[in-house]
Image (cartoon, rainbow, N blue to C red; front, side, top):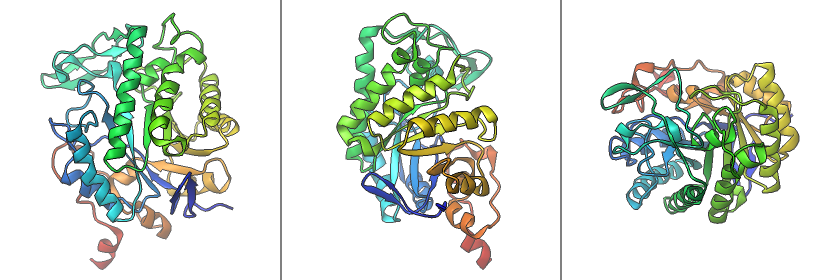
Length: 360
């Protein structure tokens, strides 16, 4: 039986274990969106993960949804990330960068007055966004014209190039959680009548064009995709998530992609388990699951063959040594949720490691 702590090959990269750190927005880049030394320390602390996937990173300078998230839209951003990748590699780690555009989840007050964009003219309902003016309702987005979509693909392609120059080990395309690519994928938002709307073959077109552009930079083995067909975050829904998973998995398998990450709302839900089986059926490559796992359930999923690796989010926030703690069955640190998005090291780089706890 495959162990959670056994190596895993991702193309020409070997992961020493199958505990992956999920991308986690922490808003430590400040208003400049430039990665910095504090971020380098944070990621280096977690380098024992089989793979680190760095947080959602802006491919466009006017694609901000969280004050303080990092960018990869110019050379200065790439320079900032270079100190992060250098620190991770110096500590024996491997790190991908998640490429992201928020689409309608942005706000003009965060982007110099630029109206948010999306697949369709549908605003996020029932929630607010934090802006310099306080909490505000989400705005009505401007639907992208068909002719504009090549430019969106180019934003991701240029970001993939910069990520390579910055020393990353690959990139992940963020197709989940109700951000721009997901706003095309799911028909709860996408009501277009052009080549990017209607059936899933059309709604997945933007994702696959972005994937192909990233593969042209990196090759297939160092590109991954995250989708979340049943996650309702950002007012998202789809009429047939099974068809979405099957089609996307088949297309990514045909491209021999590095890995597919299926982000669950809760991996214990029967509907989510059904999607995981579909993904496994249609994507024979490396399948990563994420959402509601603890070390015990992660080990069970890997040993049973349900997944090849498990991505952890919240557990890595407070436990930089999650791999070591999991291997020893040690207690996990509790998360200080009040510091998730606050500036500085508190609740970011100051969580104790297991060896420090033992020695104390």
